[in-house]
Picture 1 (cartoon, rainbow, N blue to C red):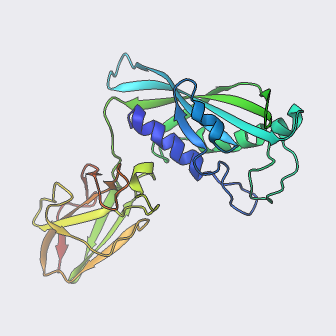
Picture 2: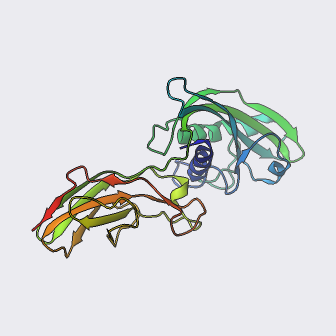
Picture 3: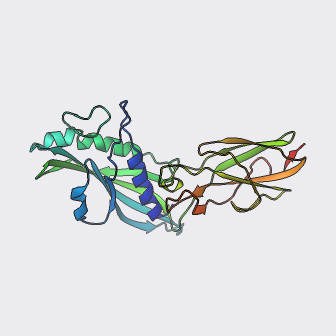
Length: 276
């Protein structure tokens, strides 16, 4: 992913973070994770805890100019309503909203879940990043109570151009009138979901002969695939040779239909699958 895509992915992962203690409540309330540059007056109107994502620069890899090393700052803030002591904002106080709520938690506890969501990115979540450093907790008194904050710095590798991960390891086994397919889905990313939170399912296309369709609209489509599926049996095929390809759709606009597709991922078992 390039830097723009990574910024959106960091925001997506933080908004998807849930408390691990049973109720599965959001760590960050809706609309409390923002991408900023400098001071933003609108931040005072957001709910706490709050995460601010700052793009802190990038530099090209000398050996591979197509790769960029990016630095990200994630500033996490928590507020203790009506309290002037920094302890509650730092380590937490009474949680009136229950075990799954963020209200009453201190910035160190919120920061713990932030690190869980971002520091172990090894590609499985759509990007590679590593925690570089974190600051100590700092606090300031406001009109609405004490606010404490911690800043985390992450390094990531980005591409110069936008990148769209494809599903991997498409394999097929032919049989009597059918082909049984398996694959590994592309990493879950923010741009695989429409505005209603529905993930777009992989697209599989096939054609007769030894050459698979080269685009997500070529050849014949396989129906009945849902997001999260990793296998599908295509039935009703006449005897012969067929070739399959799989693509992941992406929706940067939030539309229920794809704006873009990943590159082609061909069958790794054989381009030519025989149906008897």
